[in-house]
Image (cartoon, rainbow, N blue to C red; front, side, top):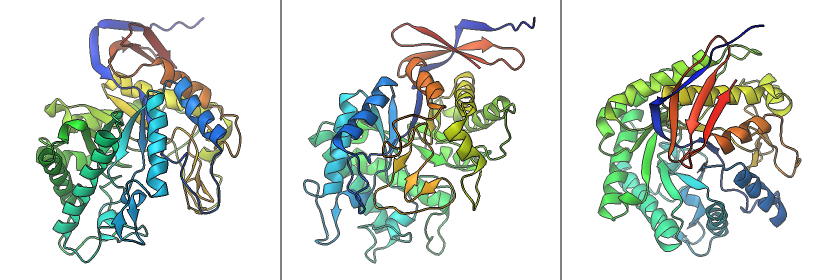
Length: 403
């Protein structure tokens, strides 16, 4: 019989505030849709209750200026526009269930400011870049006022400053450099929130540098924004997929690289998106089929989180916890888009089925029992292909994750 020696070292705490296995979950449950592809009240409640039963901790959500801007009347409509009212409802329902929110402070850079992507923006009106940045910071600050100060959504605790801003999403002006405009935006946002007395309402998270094994952008921006950013982050997906390979040391390498770029600051580091993917012009791809049909993907999600635990990462953010219908989208293309439904989750939309994918049963246990805020992570010793992680939750429970 083969024996493996596994050990937990509770005297060695490698992370004293593990925030849990978190995920992208967009505030779409109550959003209007141009084709009527909306949840019933019962379906929305079922989806949210499922997350509560998982003891889901932090939802990172899409949030953008078009939610509250009336383009016909060219004015902000914080109390009227259906999209922002639907978002308030979603925030309220998460608050009831004890789920915190990481709000996306716009999506594309520079496209969400200068209108150079195919999305409405109230900012691009012939203004200079500096004026656009000022208008954007005004909108973010007002959003915090509307959401937190006026409506009491104090579970909005984090701002993710753009999505994968290491890539140019839109069109740069002549002479602009991508990393530098992100630095400008973060500093301007920090200064605006300080001036408005709202800086303490949220923690700024970034740069959400994406699909990189090097965290080069993270290394570049840390000395430039360390007085502004509270939590650093970067990520990559795993593309070179083959069945049942030893992913764990590769994942540890990704996370150790990101951590190394900001370790000297003493600030937390999040691995803020992850998953297995392949891109193909003829979906479904092999990884889509695996996510939908094979419990092996649950093992891979466990390995991602083990790597995070054992390297000292503060949080992981899975892309995504559930399949979701993007409102008004009819995109069908690679990367798991089917008539605007993005099928990257551990369970299908409830319009498709109430039965989760096999990987849900692993991921929901990780979410439920590996703790959240206040959880301590202990050093471990594992052996061979058997991997182990160990945490003590804020309420004193010891949990072991063994793969």
